[in-house]
Length: 159
Ligand code: HEM
Image 1 (cartoon, rainbow, N blue to C red):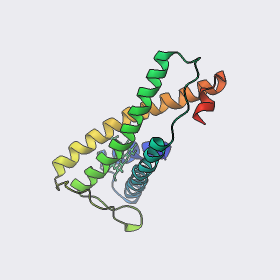
Image 2 (tube, protein in one colour):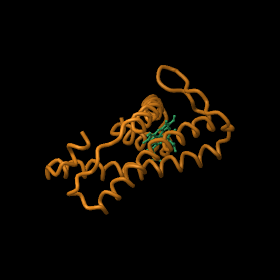
Image 3 (cartoon, rainbow, N blue to C red):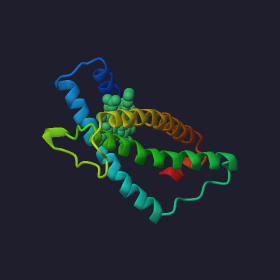
Image 4 (spheres, rainbow, N blue to C red):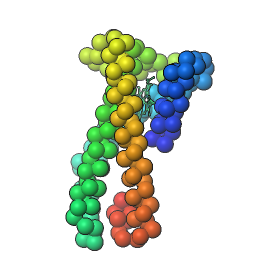
C-alpha cells in the first residue's frame, strides 16, 4: 500500500501545483485518500498485534549499536505510519475535501475546524513527514535485503 501511496501522493500534489485539475487528478486524490485511510485503520490492528505478541530476540551476532539503531528506526516508522495519515485526514477535514472513491465520503476528523490556512499547514507537514517515512522505508527494505543475502538470522527473525 505504501509503494502505491507515495508516488500517487507526489504525482497528484504536483498536478495540483501545476493547476492540472480534471478526472485523472481527482481519481489520484480519491485513491490516495482511500488507501491512506485504510493504512491508518490497519495500523490499529498492527499495533494491537505488536503489543500482544513479543518480537523474537535479535541474534547475538548483531552488534548492540545496530540493535539500538534498528529498534529506533522501527519505532519511528510506527509513529510516522500513524501520524502521517492522521495529518492527511485532518487536512482533508479542514479543507474540506472528504470525498473519496465512488463518491463515498470519509468521516470528518472530530475537533478539526474548517480553515484552508490550517489545511495548508497540515498538508505541508503531511508531505514532509511522508518523505521522512519514505526514506526510512527505503532504508528498511534495503537492510532487509542485505540481511537476506548475508543469511545472518535477521531476515528469518523478520519473517
Ligand atoms: C501512510 C499514509 C500516507 C502517506 C505515506 C501519504 C503520502 C503523501 C505524499 C508523499 C504526498 C505528496 C506530498 C507533496 O509532494 O507535497 C501526499 C499528499 C497528500 N495526501 Fe497523503 N499520505 C498518506 C495518507 C493520507 C490520508 C489518510 C489522506 C486523507 C484522508 C491524505 C491526503 C493527502 C492530500 C489531500 C495530499 C495533497 C496535499 C497537497 O495538495 O498539498 N494522505 N501524501
